[in-house]
Length: 291
Image (tube, rainbow, N blue to C red; front, top):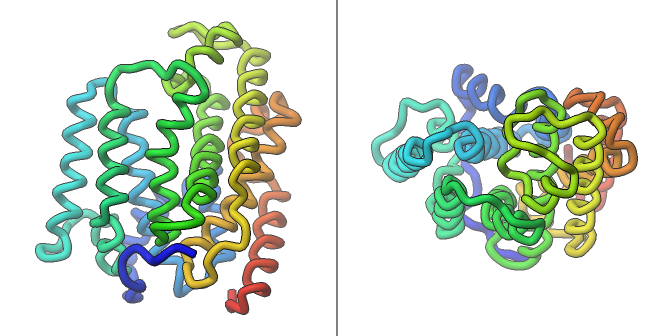
């Protein structure tokens, strides 16, 4: 069982503007957080909301900047702001939310510094050769995110990383449902196999085949390191377990019916809510935690 990263969260109510800014980032339409947040106990929600908003802000940088130097400058700003915030405060709503929930200490860890370093490396204009290279990149980014969300720095680290990779793939797949979405995160072997071309909109058939391949692959990563029973002492682990249940359902749908999945875009489905509800009921009954 892992040891907590940082101390327990001290609950300070978030200000209205800070909460709204974090919700806009973390609970965007179609996100897993949007669905499962209603099943997270109120005393645990604010800290997880602040962390999710931070990670959303950071992981979008490599996908939204065309100049690596601009991306590196943005990541450096976040690093400086987070480092000085405990002593000097911050005007940024996400950083302020991290301070209010005492989650600021969690992002002062070695795992967070490794995460930022991996994001900087991801800014380099180096194509991803194959699925193995994609997994390695996601393990050092999405895997570290999951570790920091869980608040654990030891076993079951491999399972936590696998859950993080699958969740990130679920999010990245949604870019295939949007015309004109950035696709430079795709491995070159899959791009060649499905005849994607830069600057040319891929056919629905090609995109569906790609979605199916990647969804099957993400599920195999989850299956190789299942999240299991986890740590009852970590609210973050309970959050990961809820998210993983929903991610599994969405990946199953994408793998079995990729064309239908693409047609649905990223709108939540009624089954998503029931999946999260069932997972929350099982989880909190087993652990004796009130939801």
